[in-house]
Amino acid sequence: MVVIICSPLSSHAEDVEHITKYLVEGKMRVSIGNSGTWSYLPIADMPELPAKILKRDRQRLTIVLKDEQKGVINVGDVRITNEPDIVKICQITTAQRNSDSREYGLRGVGEDCK
Image (cartoon, rainbow, N blue to C red):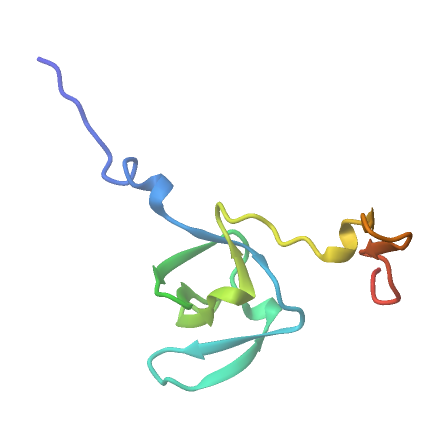
């Protein structure tokens, strides 16, 4: 007799998305519980990365905060599993010459690039 035991989590383990990076500094805008009101929580009060996403809507993510309450955050404030990382334009420097002139244009060089 052969008995095969399958874990129900193993087939869906890859389907679970996680937050891999917080894109905001200092405080994150969060709606806690079912109140519908938004407040700002320090990043230190956010879950450690990678943080499991419970539910994903179009622009909102439901997660479990450090105090075990459910919170809703904006998708644009975080980087999610399998999403490419955003590269600032000043991290890529290119020089191009217009074909019809003798002038050159530079991208990624300026006072704001650090």
